[in-house]
Length: 338
Image 1 (tube, rainbow, N blue to C red):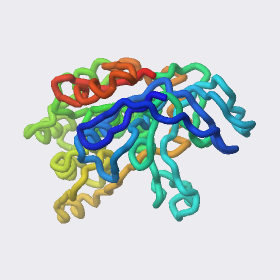
Image 2: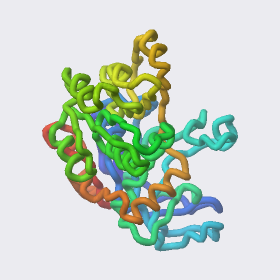
Image 3: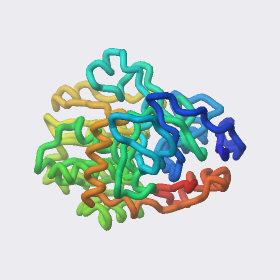
Image 4: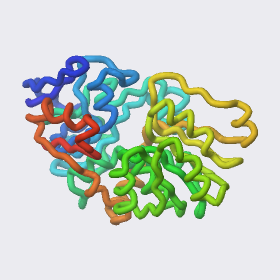
């Protein structure tokens, strides 16, 4: 079975791995058809991904075909196409008991804490498969990053008509934009890349897309009539950008930290208190987010097909993935074909 293993930072190896064991009564054997590549994979390749250990099989954005499963309440059967919820929770801790499985104290994420799907087949818990009768494998592989954005928007509790700022327009930022607009918000985007700003204008209907530079705060004040956005989503994972975002929120507003950095961030406590700002973190997603995203994509309310900019077969990932991570490649969402 073809398997791509990240042996250590900078070294991806294509090898023949063992076939998975037969599925248990609560599991399914699936054929991996598509794998989305995301920032987590690039950070792991560079050696600066938090909570990561080597060697590791990458891959948590998966579109799969069910090969074998026992009789199950969901009625999943061989041939079904599914998105994968790649977060494995304990089910026992206080977060799990409260339904916040994404905050499980023992959470393991495929491709990060345990081996993921960058291989031909994998055995997965049945409860982590989300079936669609109409979506392609590529669309299904993008349900996971879309769910991260949908979860962040849910955390913010947006009201129709609010003005929000999304800083960072990689796939997660784009997901936030899509669901913030669905919630009826007016969205302003910001990114260092003009190419990504133009993508937001062309494909997501964003009217105002600002350069994320030293003049951004001035431009943002002008775009909001001096009031600033009531919600800011920070989706860069860059510590300096995260710190700047505290100064971009309107009085009484909210800051949602979606991106993750490996170090500490600092902010002005007087400014925080003066605005009575609410600061939220948003981590991964829960099963209900996946179902909500599937419905949105199936109904055509979110079109992720333009997001896929690069493709390569599994056999070429060792060469392709490092090149996709270079800024000059301008890869938005690379996709691995299995």
